Length: 238
Image (tube, rainbow, N blue to C red):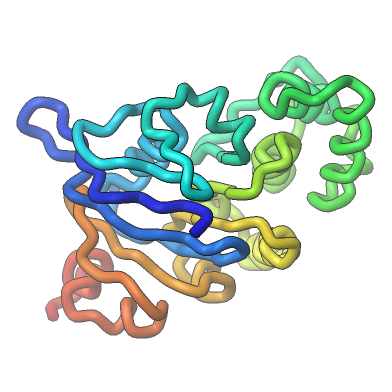
């Protein structure tokens, strides 16, 4: 398995934000994660990327225990992440933002970074905006840049945190196709999203979280039919 999350738990005092969470991801697989606000979705990403350390449990990448590794080492080991709210270096150009990610996040030489950034710009549809200041971009392009910055580190595992939020249906479709292309290149994807139709168009499996615990996981259509998921996440009686 590429990623193995083994019974991780995390609490802040009496508040449990991750409760014995366990799942795995095969190379090239796409996994979706849904749940209401406060369910522990972003916390799970923080645990996987090393921004938080679990109280119990282990996290393995390609069989290697990375539970105690700092975030920068996990990034260079192949984990890339986008954030729910894009926060680029607004006074740098799009290309410069990618260069920072490639050289400091991915540990690349300047020559390698230039090549990777060019490929990433083409993949994410940002070539024409390479020299624009990141702070001047509209929402769709800021979302693309957030994805591109994660890709510029050359990840084998890509964690996406609500990257479709705020987009129109047409913009969302463009984003889904880009992620499908990335996933088709063998990159494992774990995608947190409230825009459920975007997830269902892409993912192989689906996990539903609530109060830091997994309430359902499996084939996306079966998870969405679960009475517990409909009650907790969709707000309708079971």
